[in-house]
Length: 347
Image 1: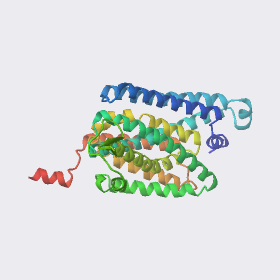
Image 2: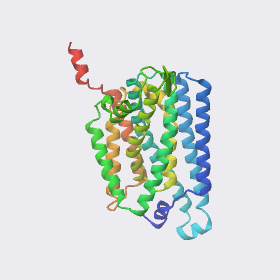
Image 3: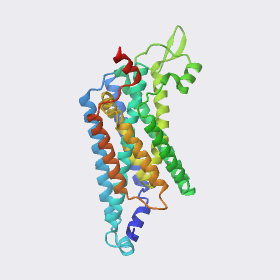
Image 4: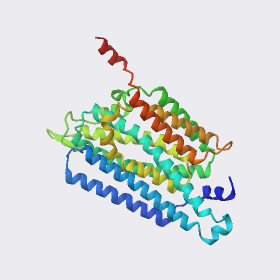
């Protein structure tokens, strides 16, 4: 790595106005989403609407990355940077940060797919009507954004003070990838979930939904509705997936602005992507194996930081190839029948 490349890698590009502008964009985006939600009430999201919103969020992510590229190229092509690092420094910074954003975005987006399938399992377990699912999802997304912002800032603070923690993150990702691979075909037992047990032991929970409300009153007694339980379960799942996914992006970049923006852009389209992919869980039955491989690869990359720094474009290529291969193979290879299903078929 020459001086120009090393300097490009070390730069943190976030400026106060960039942080403020991005925060404003997120607030406006969530406000628009919630206003549309209230206007439509409990109307079910159609496949066409979900596809359009998904394409919109993906498009906005790429527009943001393009704007970031051109801004950084212009800024770091100023005479003072050219004199110190060479004439191509602006382009080096722009390419490095744009690739970091894209790689981080794809990693977080791919892990979000697994998140979506867990959401589907929760909605199925609690028999949540499709018309009520959108309300739980939007509040879950708001919670996920706040939670991830806090965790990212804490993670950056820890890394700046204890650089050895990157090895802890790396080992954790390798272990998480191994566990995901070993249990890729397992169906989690929600009935045994400690959070659900805790709620059932501490609260009065109604048996029926009260439209999409979180609480209801029956015979003068206040009850939490199944909708409230669903919201809590989604929030807990957000915490679990944030713990898995945030260390993964630190293997791509330590730039706080790139880490946060790639994470948030991946989450903003989660609601639309849920309604788009909810019916495709069985079609992509090998996706968990692909995600497990990616987590192990990223964890190994972090563990090898002092031995060899794997370039961002290599990480990006691995993520794209593994995700594409796992999806294509899922369509070509039929899923294995689970024991219960095999028993029913034998009968």
